[in-house]
Amino acid sequence: MATGSNIGKELMDDLTVKTSFTIPIGKGIEIDESIVVMWFIMAAVFIVAFILSRNLRVKNPNKKQLFVEFCIEWYYNMFDGMLEGGAKIYAPYLMCVCTFIGIANITGLFGVKPPTKDLNVTIALAVMSIVVVEYAGIHANGVRRWAKSFTEPVAIMTPLNVLEIIIRPFSLCMRLFGNVVGAFVIMELIKMAIPEVVPMVLSLYFDIFDGLLQAYVFVFLTALYLNEAVEG
Image (tube, rainbow, N blue to C red):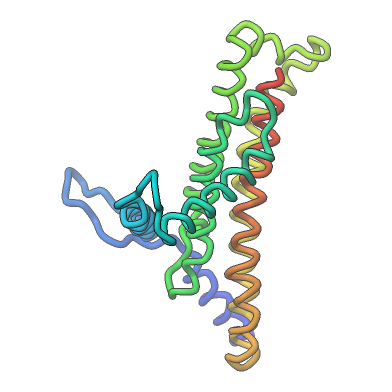
């Protein structure tokens, strides 16, 4: 029992959102560890993008530029293929979200707690995506037709259709959060039970493949919602 209790305490300690530092304004503004990691991810992406976008040429591009253009075109076409009709204009948004979540999910390889283990982060991502989805519906169909869609197929379905706006982000955030935390818990239990070699091999799946897969699933579901919203 003592061993099981200790394991439980270690897991809970690892999963607890910790404060990195406090900004001395008023009663103090606590900055969580997940926010700091997000800042580093955004800074890293910005620096890489800045470096790769320097000295671009229309004629006689170098190998670096050709490789970057190939990667971006492949990436864009993948998300463009998920979207239909007017929803295709939101492909860049899906690219940005997928890139952020993908990088966030694999930060555990560097000994950093992934920010997606913080439920607040996954809620923010889900709410942001649903806001874009609802905006896409209004932009494509107009406010009147968008509002009328809540009464379809029959008016009695209106409460359920409105409730769906809440259910969708809840589903998105809990799916992402649950999978990331679940993979983390499994890896921690494996590390406690068997030697380091096996956890290192399994981390290739849980930290890399599963992390990138969850990013793809998140944007794939968002793409489905966007298609539905634009179609009206």
